[in-house]
Image (cartoon, rainbow, N blue to C red; front, side):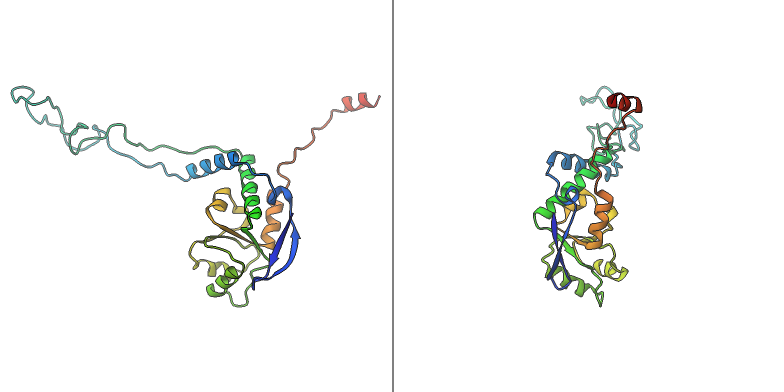
Length: 226
């Protein structure tokens, strides 16, 4: 697969060959959905907590006599049916963590990258070494290639000044290539990568799904030769 490479003025300077197993994977919605559900669940704190009738303060005295008032029996003002009483079956601290296999997470990542590449939402810069690394200049470079309105910037090789300038741009998140994940890729409309980031992604994620041949025992191999 080939991807166009842009300069900071928005002109295509050349095309580069990229790995098909990273940027041209077949769509698999089931895998992407399962990975996203797992990643979003793992972000939950799970600290929601309400008090039951035994945990609410007060209510130790019987509010009225058992008999003689004509009203319903009541032993405490902290029963669930009373105002200010405890909650029945409310949330308690728990872990929402889900274990997702590494192979599945890697597959979802390259599937989402490939989807962005097919839709023309993956933009590659030759580099982002701006002469004057100001927020305005970075915005001009991003607008020149039609990136937006939300941008995931993978600027491997860019200077720290460029990364600092990107912090002032709303709806833009800058991460290194090794921190790429399927949820972030789908959360942002445009993925902007430097050429160095593309190559790093190929090194990190490429060739992960090739089945390695099993070693043949020597005795079996010798028997086949005979």
